[in-house]
Figure 1 (cartoon, rainbow, N blue to C red):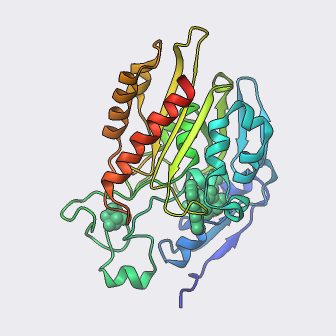
Figure 2: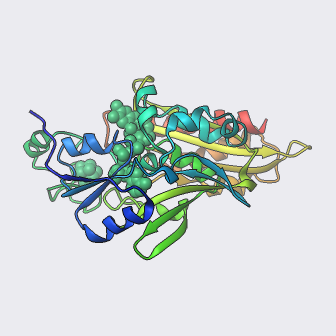
Figure 3: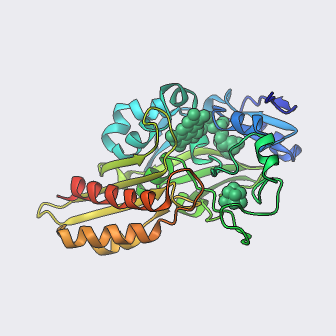
Length: 326
Ligand SMILES: Cc1cc2nc3c(=O)[nH]c(=O)nc-3n(C[C@H](O)[C@H](O)[C@H](O)COP(=O)(O)OP(=O)(O)OC[C@H]3O[C@@H](n4cnc5c(N)ncnc54)[C@H](O)[C@@H]3O)c2cc1C
Ligand code: SF4
């Protein structure tokens, strides 16, 4: 029988109390909606002594306007983001990506902060303790070999969150609270191309807000996702695109990000360099598709094939660029 490990639950009422707990307890995991964490706890992928349940912190919810950006509280649910008329209008790529996470019940529970901090995924890792034990575990948890790339010392587990690539195309940042105070980090500097380390967040830090610049408001946006079951699954390949054309039909702004095909979500900046200032032609679409396909390095971390996932990245980039720039 799969059971939960034993832990103590801490329920801070505000961010400063949360940070006090973070400073005091080392072996701790943050719980937001719990839709990823609880599954991982049950699989004994995490065995914390304490779980910091931040859901009761009111200040971490909702969307606020500031001078040069909009701020989304880390506990804002994916349903709220995908259905908010304001977000749909000014940041459509984000609303679309949030609306394609899992299914409706998980979007009601799942938060934007939890979605960004999703653990990386691999067929050999997202399994019960008994299953993993029968395969002698792996580098990412409890073992010392990688079944995907035997002989290597690197974990290729795929980052499989849907909203991070959308936020990357909007040039978003995150606000982080820790015992020393607060800091802001560009989202592109948050992620790390390593399936074990995953991102730059210390064990005594929590994300409090997601900041999206007003300069990114009004960009057209698309998010396209390949998954096995359209009603609920994680992406196996995903592409977010935000951009706009000027009055003459030239590309004024374009930003393309990929998910689920590397250990981190990634911006394909070469496509921006290639397209800005130009009218989209079939030749430029083909070059962009090649740049995206080169950036995508899916490994055998799922039951879907690597060539098909790379192929779908190309298909989505072509469709998305044509929708936005033609
Ligand atoms: C059947 C199923 C299908 C799913 N499909 C998808 C999918 O299609 N796309 C997708 O992106 N996800 C999917 N998920 C994963 C998950 O449900 C979502 O990513 C969800 O948004 C996670 O948010 P949460 O609030 O529930 O996170 P939690 O489970 O509470 O936390 C997730 C991780 O983030 C950390 N964390 C949470 N909040 C913070 C914070 N403020 N600061 C620091 N760390 C924090 C937690 O410690 C944990 O490690 C799926 C899950 C299931 C069970
Ligand atoms: S890529 Fe290798 S080390 Fe990483 S989770 Fe999969 S099997 Fe484990």
